[in-house]
Length: 275
Image (tube, rainbow, N blue to C red; front, side):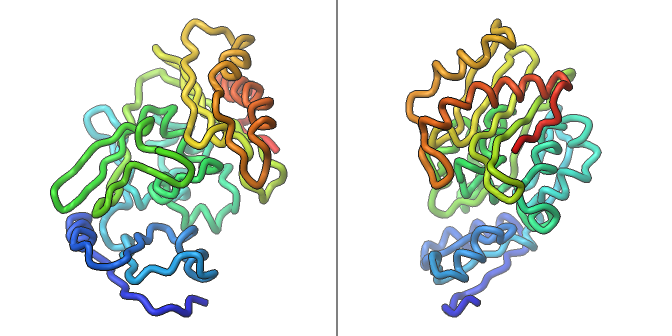
């Protein structure tokens, strides 16, 4: 139960939400799907004076525009799973959504934008957005600012979102014929991932790893055969990230294997999920 009083605001558009956030008057929390904010408000680790709920702001959408897929910040994992456009053009995201810990309860509530903004190194979303070369559009009262996913994540639970901004949408250029593979390692069905790997082939093959460092680690694989993936990944890890699930050194020791399995998943030899 949330016992602390707070002001609740539900803007009817992204523009209105930006105006509300821009007044700078109160300690404000943005509510997306609520899978992070509500539990933390319940246990008292978050105590905002004001909550801005984006449920009515029109940010739940998946569309094709100018060769790119545009995903609204309020789009849920269930929306990704059910979208024919995602299945056809960005199947990596559908694979990711199907494997999100928590099953249908989280699929129906958790949002892509919320996961990106929470920036938990263990989450499925951050590394996948980096691998896909996504652009995040941030709206404020002054307009829209675009940030590449590789620059968006600044540290564990830290992003480039500035005061008065909200994430409006995620834009991903879906290249024809480009395949993706996703693989993660976790201790049990209900646990958070220890290491995730999202692979994208095409003209510039690359893999992004989550959980290994405080921010997603992008490794270019052009000219590297499958057998050399593990060495290429190990050589790039310079600041292993330790959390409650595993030490940084352990993560570093398995990261190459998880990356290789993501590459294999793209070729259809794995199912893209691990325990």
